[in-house]
Image 1 (cartoon, rainbow, N blue to C red):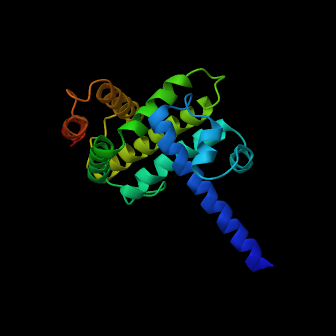
Image 2 (tube, helix red, strand yellow; image 1 turned 30 degrees about the vertical axis):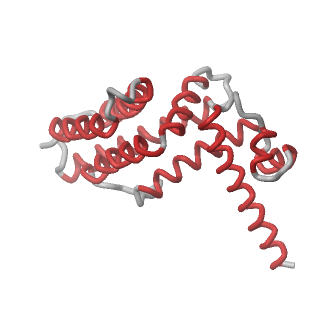
Image 3 (cartoon, helix red, strand yellow; image 1 turned 135 degrees about the vertical axis):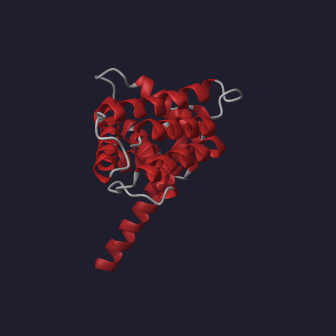
Length: 204
């Protein structure tokens, strides 16, 4: 029985992954509002009720898509959520991620930016997820700048929380500018310039 149960669980995981992959493709192409649960279910050969069984709601599926995008970014960077990179490593990660996004992930980046704007209201479905994600990013950046000050790679008279908020604001703003005008905004060059300037400004 244990073997059968394991096979059932494996099939469930595989079906859930297939649904997320289909949702990423359709959301990126048609937007969340323009994509119904039925279309996603049809793409993977399932029924809408089966999709809801796996995720509970469309909002939960959207959240799963966003979490998968973050997981893939960490995988590309050979990083983990608990990684403690040096200042140089972290800045290089941001530049590499921008390069990948500009090359292959424009639609997914647009989806992320659009959903952020649509969930600014505390009463919206994904507001808490985006708020907590932002807080987690800033916390990682605070830890990064604090470690850099402790190991001597950054000045000790700087405010890690302020630097974290500034860096997070750059990341969000840079993606928005690029999405609005990709012909004139080079996302990778913009990241490289910003982080080189930041490194110079905060170095001892």
